[in-house]
Amino acid sequence: MTAQSKLRLLPWTGPEGKPCYLDTDDREGFMSRLADHIEAEQLGMAAELLGQSVQVLDDETEDLEKLRLVAAQLAGALRDVLRVATSRGHRLVTPE
Image 1 (cartoon, helix red, strand yellow):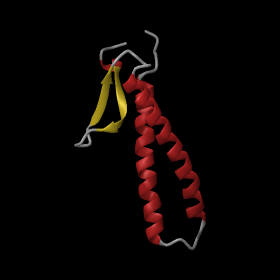
Image 2 (cartoon, helix red, strand yellow; image 1 turned 135 degrees about the horizontal axis):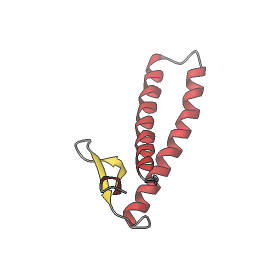
Image 3 (cartoon, helix red, strand yellow; image 1 turned 90 degrees about the vertical axis):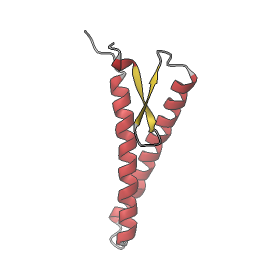
């Protein structure tokens, strides 16, 4: 592992929207477990939102405001899921 790959991208951002990282080798530490829990929550919420959004998109009577709300929520969920995927991808062990 390189020094940079030891940093774990956390599933939240700092006050200015910048990424937050955790520098630890302890996957069972408090912050690692907290990050794992939040990632699981984000993935679960994204899956639930996907199901709800399909229903909204299938309903031809939905107004534009409702569609915009769903699009904004989907964008936020996609951002979270991409952050989780990036974080997990960085932690994969790659052969030398």
